[in-house]
Amino acid sequence: MAIDQKYRDVVRNATLAAGAAGIPGAFSFGADVTAMAATWGTMIVAIAKRSNHRVDPAFAAKLASGVLTGVAGYVTGSKIATTAMSLIPGGVLLAVGVNSGLNSLFTYRLGLALSKLFDKGKLDASDATTAVTTLLSLMIGLPTWGQLRDFGSLLTEG
Image (cartoon, rainbow, N blue to C red; front, side, top):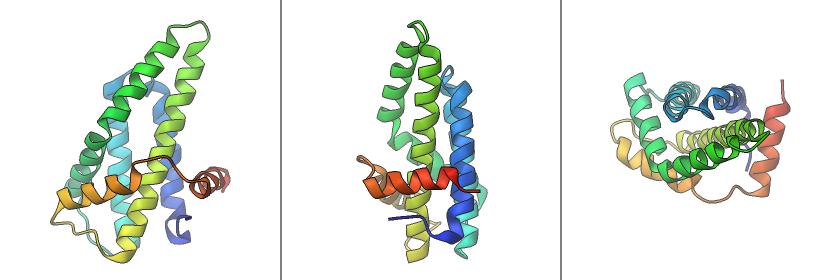
């Protein structure tokens, strides 16, 4: 399952931004979460606009925060792992790479889930809780090989 062409540039830009935010984010949980929420909020608004849905920035921020909260266990685990990596010689580069890569992959998966939801018209801006639950159900679990191929393709476009 690949991201529809009309959303690819939006998701690509957000994915690259999330990866870049992973560099300082490997050292600061607060900076990482703040950057991810801003990146995801911007992506949500842009995908909504492309699909002719109206989503205001406040709703987008609430949705992004809700999804981040939903994956908090994962985020906490990755922060513990990157902190541990940075304590070993040469591990700082590994920590930055892992954090950037995971930020990018989760942003890609959120963009994929959002684009599918908006195209089906099932994302109701008046109900952020339902939207978050739906998005989390689409993001949880390991990515498929098709998603990983599309993710790699997306990063090399442009």
